[in-house]
Each structure stands twice: as structure tokens, then as C-alpha cells.
Length: 239
Image (cartoon, rainbow, N blue to C red; front, side, top):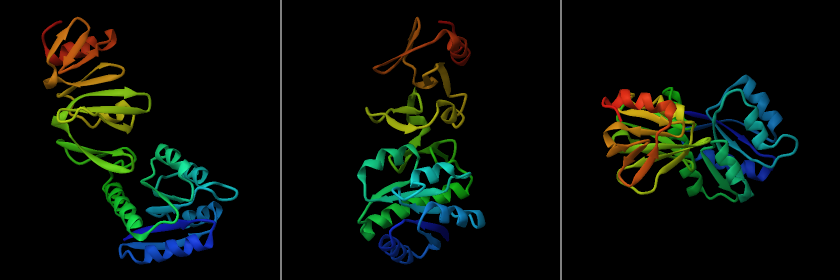
């Protein structure tokens, strides 16, 4: 059973939300709240697994409320404004529903949230990466969990708070909000090596090494002086 909280300043929206929640047998509505202050009071007494959260509320907004929480429950934003979708993505919410929400769309969001809740209860970090075993892991991509097979990874590129994961079977990399180090900790160290502050490569996918460049298929990846020794240790022979 997933314990959930409904937070919205509009009574009609709360009524509809409660009706939808009651139609799903694995959801238990702990309480409905008209503002962030009521929600904070509930959470002090009883932490929940999932929050259905409006954004535009008087006083403390939904985003401010979410950022203030000492722990991060799974969250589905429900709002009348599409313009907040990017903000929701940056806060790692599971889904973003625009009012009025039909039940079919609501159910899809809840099923997605249920997957995140299950991973979280298993001790997996659901905000960005969920480790399943040494062969694959999941990353959060646009409110969905995407499975990444470790043997398919050719290299990884860091772009500040985001990373691009390049794969054998597709030309389009998978992009997710995650620090490079967090993903590196999930990968087998014998198979991957950091060659630059912005790049990590799969050792067995390296086509060739020339001067300060690694070639993987059509990709040319720079080697920094700082990581050159680490690369040499990983592959054996000198450049």
C-alpha cells in the first residue's frame, strides 16, 4: 500500500483527486490539505510515500514546499499551468499533470510513481539512478525510468548537472540529471575509466588511442593530462 498526500488550494480539485485515488486499490490517502502549511503538519506526524502537489498555492508554493522537505518523497505535480513543467523536471518529480486530468492519464502517472516507490523501498536512489544489478540500471529521463544495459554503454559525457550516456544501438544519447561521480559509482571499475573531467569510456569499446584522443566508433574523445595515467593503468600499454 502506498501512503499518499493530496495538496491543493482548490476544493474541487481536491475532490476530484480524492475520487481518483479511491479508484486505485494500492493507494491510501492519508489526508487532503489546502496549503503547504497543512501538508507540513501532516508530514511531521506521518511521512508518506507519494505526494500529489499543486504548484500555485497562496503563501508557500508547491515548489517551495518540495524544496523545504528534509526527505524527498515521490511527487506528482498537478497544476493548471504548463509553464511549470521544466521546473518540475529540475526538481525530479515523477510526473507533471495539467488540469483537468482524466483518469487514464492519472493512472499512468500513478503507475510510474508506484515503480519509483518500489525502488525507493528497496533502498535504490530513485531521483536519478536506480541500480538493479551489475548488468543494467535505470535512469530518470523525462519522468520515466529508462533501462540502461551496461554492456551497451560506449562512453559517458558530463554536462554540469546532466550526463549523456552513449549506447551502441542508438545514435541518440540518453540524457539524465545526474553528476558523473554518482553514475561512475554504479559502474564496474574494471570496465570503465575516466579520461577527462567530462568523459568516461568503456575500455572494451575503445577503437584506438592517438596522442591525446580516444576513438570510439565515430566519436573522438579528449584525454586530459590529469587522467592520462589512470587510462594507461586501465589499458596496460603506453600511448
